[in-house]
Length: 193
Length: 193
DNA sequence: AAAAACCGTTGATAATAATCAACGGTTTTT
DNA sequence: AAAAACCGTTGATTATTATCAACGGTTTTT
Image (cartoon, rainbow over all chains, first blue to last red):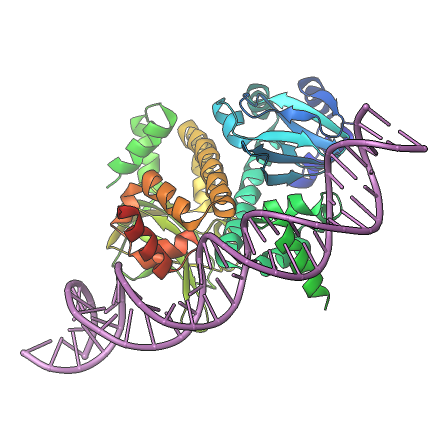
């Protein structure tokens, strides 16, 4: 269960965790299991916990009055599932986070996570690197979104995140890309030819 | 010159800088002055310095073969001008950063900045808070971009960043929003009625 | 086992925004 | 002071994408 998280940290920071640090981490996180379609976070609630995904798939989304929904983020193994604004500022979340497969998580509050970072240098280092990569990936997604057609956006998505393609339905991927499911379907079928 | 930066740090962290810390900061940063249309960073170069904008306005942009250009970020006073990917990974930048007004900057390398953070707790704290806010703002920009029409995006932009409206030409703002200058012009003139 | 909900696809039509072109009014350069 | 470049606007046309509706084939629920 915890091995994935240990691997993740060492892979990010290029340094080993001591047995003592591993114990600290084990004590700080709480395992949680969700079934498909269960919510980790409900719109309007405060997102007190972030969750490291050991196994499974989740999405961040919101719903409007007329039955519509928008998917804004997708998560699989080795992702952290949280709504950054709510988790950071402890404000009510505008989004929900839903398990899309049966999912195993390791959860922790922001306060405990920050405290852990003061005790374990690797965790502090991991935070910095995660923020860097997150900012870089988001900037790229933004550039594609404001500068490219639906077709190019899907092309790039398929090349950059092949691990998402067969784990989420197309209408969620379409929404994530900012297009309708019909347009995505046409884009996919045209690019076969 | 440095007072704006000191104010910025104390405003972010809610804690004062000691005289010693202020001296450390003064020694770590190098002032730089740019005239309008001068480049702080050229596409293809490595972005070795980030710059705190004391006074002025800048934009991050790229140019294509056929004379076109795309503006992906706008900066004014109290912003940090850098291209995160190139600055972090020291890879050649896909973007340029150009002064759009005569601009005064305080510049520093990533290495020196990180080292400063180890000596001055307020700087480390500032990094964390900056990353949080940056991630939150970018997520919002992304949600608007994939979920809203040109009109809504401009509305939100005008409400959220009034300080940009009269300092950058409309065609750059249009590009930043992912629409053409003609569409922005029409959106603006329709919403008057 | 039957019913219901979900999913991806296709077609027809409508809305949105891009493109191309031209214009006067700036500002900048020479 | 004249020429050139830049800027925002408007009109006409085209391209892209959304919307609405319907369909068969799944999967899930009852």
